[in-house]
Amino acid sequence: MVRDAIGQKKLTALADRGYYKSDEILRCEQEGIKTLVPKPLTSNSKADGRFDKLDFVYIESDDKYRCPAGERANWRVTTIEAGLKIHKY
Image (tube, rainbow, N blue to C red; front, side, top):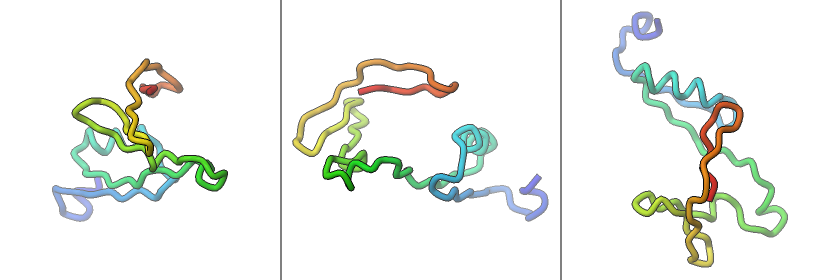
């Protein structure tokens, strides 16, 4: 195990944007390894003159997103896609 090889009990893993899998991040978390993962930039919306994911702010206390116009997007449904839980707003 890596902990034994480097003689450290606490580990932090840094993932490169777009070069990781969510199951790997979950496994690190389950093993007590702190993970630092940048948000993926998968949308061309900005380039097309539309709002991008980064323009929407998640409000944890309300479980809603705030759009750039100040409106709120409410949670609608949760689905499972490729084994991952997806919340749709």
